[in-house]
Image (cartoon, rainbow, N blue to C red; front, side):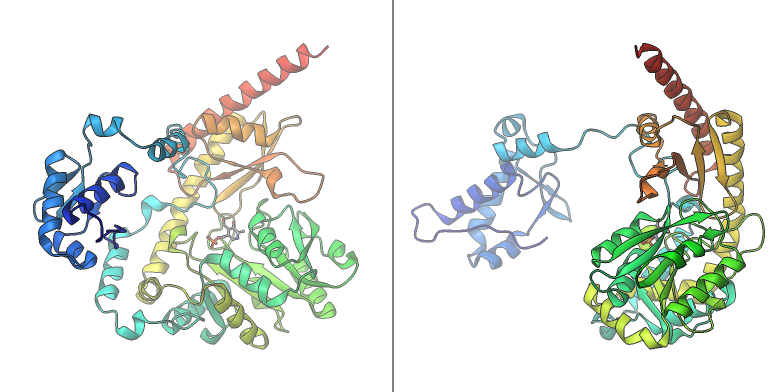
Length: 487
Ligand SMILES: Cc1ncc(COP(=O)(O)O)c(C=O)c1O
């Protein structure tokens, strides 16, 4: 329990025990102290207020007697969970305002952030939580004072080495541990890269459609984002070459284009690298979910083809473990290392050491590789269930764009369907999808749905596609009625 703010006026005539009683009662009624909240022990509060224990005991006794507080054997004193009726009637204006402003209840199954089709979710139900808890506990118990102090901005060397080994082995990334910079997820990595490479007004090229989070990171750095179209081979490098003025960097998702799912061909990769070499520009490779590929062997990273150290590689544990672990990484060319470390420090100094320690062990002891192997089979089944469901229930109205890799499928909607409207209607039925149009920066948007399948099992996905089919039929009917009603 943090220190309680309880002002006392020693010059007043009101006795101290009465002031403590009134102060605590007011704090409860005003909502400063909430039902179920632990309050300090009488000993701690008397020390805090610099008074003897007697008046504090007297105030607590009175509040216990009146039902404001409750004691729980062996664990302390708490604000009563069920305040008596007359207390609720006396609830202050402040508490009422707070209650009125609270959000409406979430529709069932939809708004807990875990609804079917929610993007960017891995199979949280399959994560080896007990093992992870054991690693965390073991490392927490052994935490040294040095590990409790400020850490290396680049991250723990044991984790950097384990990440470098994984990237070299599984992704063909050319790197040493000394080039790996740990950060809080790939979003923070994008912020660091933008801060290190771009000055206000600099131009950065992005895939169109593209990942809105990357656009937000470049905007935050004051850069000007130039949209470059994506076709069946990935970013159109000819269009990139035609951009006027100096372009400092190009952001790409070559393994699995976000959002459309295309894999950039080898010819395009070489053309992109060539562009970077000619222009002295940087390539930001976001390899956010490349570990999962269903139709052929995973392709190596673009970074592995780079012979002139122009590629900055970004990866994350959000999709392979779980997003709230908030650990991602950059692989930085040696010439940029100091700039990146400075930018990383400016952002938030360093990442929490305990999670880094546990994660390093998770990788080193082989649990990570085992988890990845297991998840490949699980995601293949989930993806197949989604495709079967879409074919069965939605094939008249959606076309699957690409389902070769990753944890989501992009589908294009039939002519005349507005994706934002469809997503709103889906939300009312407990489904969480992302409108494809939100990934376009320019005027000519395409309507589609981004359907995440990582976070739901096959049964839920099949059921969700059935509901989606109904939503699309209802939408069509409403649309036809609207058109018919138009004079
Ligand atoms: C393309 C892409 N990049 C980066 C991220 C950010 O991931 P995180 O910050 O959780 O590592 C996401 C998340 O969905 C993504 O889709």
